[in-house]
Image (cartoon, rainbow, N blue to C red; front, side, top):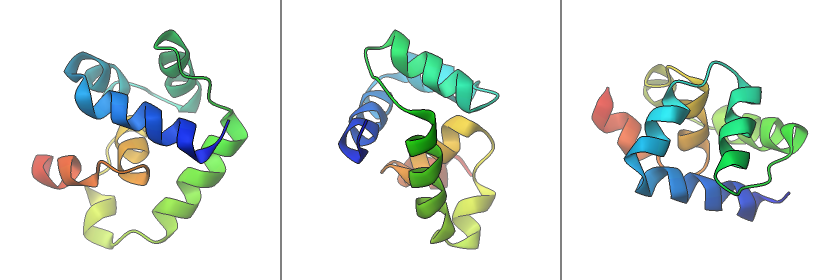
Length: 88
């Protein structure tokens, strides 16, 4: 799995409201991986956590306060932070 696979999944989530709702309901990283796999995306847990951590480490405080689920964190980390700001 690569960063491009993560971005591809995030793009799918951004374009699909039902998929986004499923992701927002994810209670942990394993849920995110299961949802991704069910939608044809092969993600690796260690790479996902490492890349997500890197992205979140550089986020502004106001961006982090908008994160309420694993799905929100994934969307923020991989290119959909505008949605989170709009929701806050």
